[in-house]
Length: 199
Image 1 (cartoon, rainbow, N blue to C red):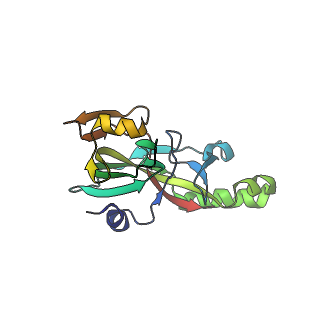
Image 2 (image 1 turned 120 degrees about the vertical axis):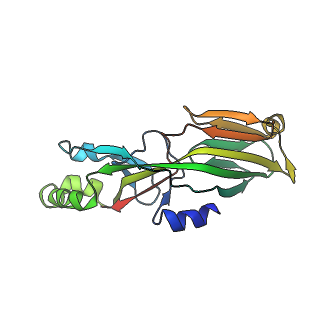
Image 3 (image 1 turned 45 degrees about the vertical axis):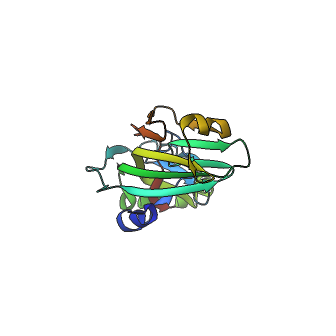
């Protein structure tokens, strides 16, 4: 299934994170437009007990396919970044075999009264957090096979390294199978997307 169709059908309301690190977890506060991290709920509600639990089951049945094309920098699902060294256009074709998620409690219904209390009693703090996005759920591409192409040719690891710099996110396991397919796995820390609500 196509990546965008899968998201629309199985994770409606998902917002894709253009940049993420392991610090992006449920309970994070993000800029509602750029989704850059601004802080954490625990900063404004220090007595709030937050529990983060994995989503109970793998939500992928079959494979999810997608692709990205660029002459510049490509960030892919929190797994890697690719920076072209020339004018060569590079295409990434990827197949996701496993998506996992994490979710926090308390949820939005419990958080709203606490946030409204801040609005009434601490206008200075409210101005800092008003319109920020609260991450309730985070989603991770855990097993992904990636093929790289340029000018219609499938690139080997050596071919790719001649025209681009590739950085795998820390903590990932990765290997080149048959020299043409990069497999990235064990991603439980850097999310590619989130769901939540705007304060």
